[in-house]
Image (cartoon, rainbow, N blue to C red):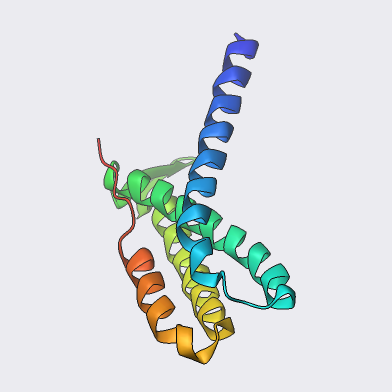
Length: 131
C-alpha cells in the first residue's frame, strides 16, 4: 500500500511539474527580446511565476470545492475558522502580483505595454477547476 501511495504522489508531482512547464511556455515568449544578462535573471523569476500560477489554480480548486468556513475542534472547544486554503490563496496572490509587477518593469519600454497587457490577461484569467 505504501508503494501505491508513493506512486500516486509521484504522479501528482509529475502532473504539477507538467502544469508549471505549460505555464512557462505561455509566459516566456513575452521576454524573448531581453538581453542575455536580463534573461538569466528573468528565467528564474518566470519559473517562480509559473509555480505561483499553478499553486493559485490548485488553491482556487480547493476553495471552490470546500467551505470558506470550516468546523474546527481543538480539545473540547469547537468553533468555525477560515479555510486554510483561503489564507494561503491570499498570501500567494500577493507574491504573484508583486512578482508580475517586477517582471513587467524589466521589459524594454517599447515592449512594456504590449507584454504588460498580455501578462495581465494571463494573470487575470486563472484556470478555474471545479468538481
